[in-house]
Length: 123
Image 1 (cartoon, one colour):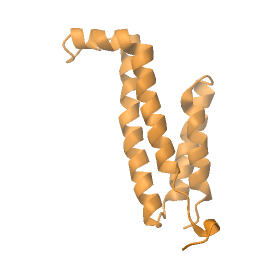
Image 2 (cartoon, rainbow, N blue to C red; image 1 turned 90 degrees about the horizontal axis):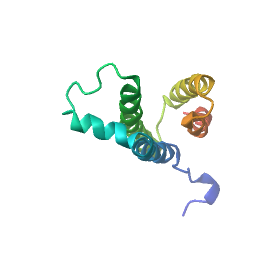
Image 3 (cartoon, one colour; image 1 turned 90 degrees about the vertical axis):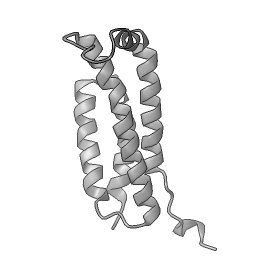
Image 4 (cartoon, rainbow, N blue to C red; image 1 turned 135 degrees about the horizontal axis):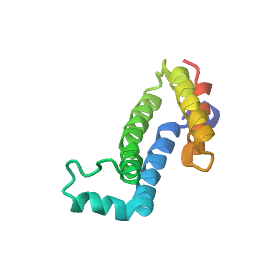
């Protein structure tokens, strides 16, 4: 049996998966009527030039790639070999800094814990 201090906690990818799920739910809550209009317009070409519809689509579409990233990071955390962790952590950190600068009242703050977690991984 391993001592508690030697067991690595697997949380970074799971955190990102939770944020992805939350992001998708919030997209439905914030943009439900707009997303319904997309369906009513037949989906194909339904965004057009409407900035609100475009924002709704981008907000909704951010969740799945974030979930994929979370799944990949979880697999890497479980493998115990994660040579690109620090570079990925730096990328997420810088992306989040830009997001917070552009939109301080946003969910970008939720990306800092996993970014710092990745930066702390020694490979």
